[in-house]
Image (cartoon, rainbow, N blue to C red; front, side):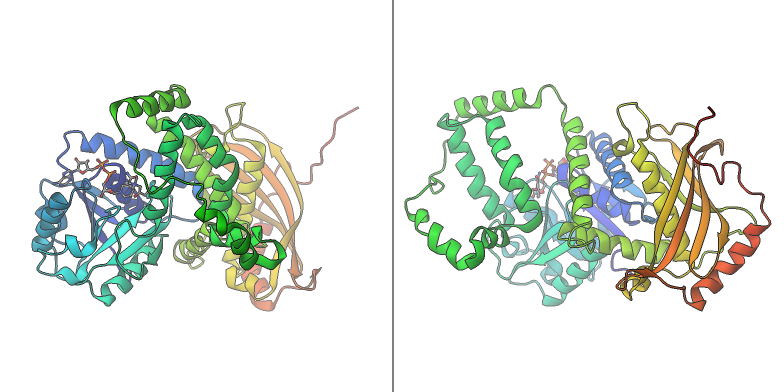
Length: 496
Ligand SMILES: NC(=O)C1=CN([C@@H]2O[C@H](COP(=O)(O)OP(=O)(O)OC[C@H]3O[C@@H](n4cnc5c(N)ncnc54)[C@H](O)[C@@H]3O)[C@@H](O)[C@H]2O)C=CC1
Ligand SMILES: C[N+](C)(C)CC(=O)CC(=O)[O-]
């Protein structure tokens, strides 16, 4: 039983719109209330970017999208939902009023999270009748991709609420980090504000411009932070003696000091204009939506890299993505679904997304192999070779692949794959996969592949157990009656 089946977003700006996208893409129906005249257009644009990002993020079967409904009042939006996320502007009286209105109309068991970046939950819940179910759920932009939510309870929040909230965000692929004590700006924004304050001084004092400052971050410690954070990074920087040596060496610098961060820079018109002009130059004419798309592609790339980290087990946000995908496959990878074995098995349906397209304007070659690999993974799940099976020490490894490119796949094109078994025994599976255009059925590419059953720790091929071959056999028997596909058995060659 999932904790959130229906949610409400009160406020649909940068953060509320992206919360809505996170919920909808997790299969949750969402009611939105935002009085902004252009709320539907703005949220529609955020949804489009989020869908594009998810197309790149995962091949795992996302649930059918939730429905998005625009409501005329807070009451209408929150009446019958399990989770309400408040994301109105960062002003205490406004937020307090909105949360009190939400509280009056929501079911008593509904969870109420606030996206506030720094206000104390105790200050937000003062006028609520059921303050025990209200907490801060502080996300990071873009909410649909970045998985962190800081969960902060106020004086009146019940521990049970925080437990339920943590479990609920895990179901939508997020990592709920429970902050032990409430404090303004929690943990993340405390750190960000210290950095931000120092950065403003560096610009004001003409030490560097905004682009140079961003370069300093993105070519260096920004990359370190994404994968290991601060303390583990500095542990390594201490050399073999680790953190203690690091503290002994760099601890005294803190007193010199290198920073000015206790002084607040005066954000006068001159400084605002200076930063604005430098930032405009840095953006080089790219719109915010374009920058968002570039950011999303990069974030997806980072998460994919982290998913392959720690020897393939996944690391940090990549491990979280891998775990989320495991759950998606368990729910939607439908090993129980019955497949029509009288023809090639239709195993993957997807669309060509932006990250797959190359300078020739069509799907680039390694993405074909990815899609063929996803298809053979789908076959393996069908015959019981799932994550648990692999963790227990056995798997199938691909030992040979021959790909033929027969057509083109363009950005956004709907495509699907079909797989035909050519032969199999207790060690080998020899099969032929086609990528089709979904509209016409036309074959765009084919791959002939061979997989071997292996004992992964021994590093050698071994016969698959009877329960696996028993699941494979009916498919093999049915496919033995199909004609050998045109192109099977081909090799790369030229008539001379
Ligand atoms: N922008 C960011 O990077 C982050 C913002 N937050 C927090 O999220 C919250 C919202 O911030 P943003 O989305 O950036 O602001 P925003 O200005 O983009 O969106 C706020 C939205 O609230 C709507 N609104 C105003 N009064 C309302 C009311 N009475 N009922 C319903 N909607 C109402 C506005 O029309 C607007 O669409 C703030 O608490 C902020 O601190 C949290 C994490 C990151
Ligand atoms: C600038 N901000 C305080 C609203 C930022 C956040 O709260 C988190 C983020 O996404 O950086």
